[in-house]
Image (cartoon, rainbow, N blue to C red; front, side, top):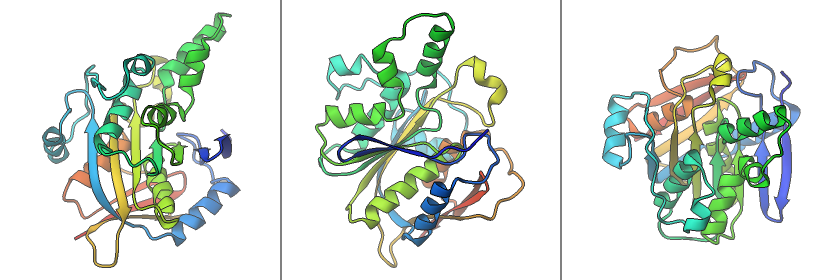
Length: 287
C-alpha cells in the first residue's frame, strides 16, 4: 500500500494533517513526512504534563486509571460518558467514540483559554460511521450528509472548538500505529512556536468486524487527554524523540499502542520504546 501525505486547509487558521504510512505498512516515509521528522528532531522534546484525564468502559475516574496502569488490561464494555458540558443538540450528533474524546477534552480544559491550541489524534477515527457509509454505497443507497461530515478526521476537534467557542488553531493528526507520538510531536512544535500550553486528545475504538483480518494490535474503545507545557532545564517531566533505527518487531503488550502510551505516562517506568514504519520512538521520564 502506498504511503500518504496530505495537508488540507479547512478554513483560515485551521489545519487538518494526515501523514506517514498507513497502518500496517512497512514502507519508507514520504518526503513530506521525512521533513516533518527532521523538524521534530530539532525541537526541544522535553515537556511537562500539567493535567490528564481518560475514559474507557469500566475506567471512568483517575484512581481507576492509576490502578489500571499498575495492572493494565484491555478495557471492555459499553459505558458512555454523560458529556453534560456540551449542548444537547450538538451532543446528540456525536457517537460513543466521539463522546469519549470530547469528554476527556472538557475534563482536561475546565477553564477555557480560547487561544490554547488543540491536537486531536486517532489512528482510525470514526471507522464505524465510515463503514456504514461504505456499506450504503455498496447497496446503492444515498449517503447522509451529516454522517459524512462527522466521519472526517477533524470532525471531533471541530465539534469541540465550536461548542467551546475557541479561537485558537486545532490539528487533527493520524499516523498509523504511531498516532500518539505524532500528536505529541505536533504539540511540541506548537510549544516551540510560543504556545504556553497545548491540549492533546487521543482516541480510538474497536473497528467493525469486517476489518478484523487486518488488525495488527488489540482493539478497545478509549480516549485520553493531556495538557502539556514546555519544560525548562532541570524540570521533571517527559521527553519524546525518534530516529530511523528500526527493529524487527517488538513483544506484544496486549494493549493498543495508544493505551500503552497512557500506561507509560501514568506508571513509574523510566523509559519506553516503540517501533513503527521504520522509526524508533523513545519516551523518557525525567525525575
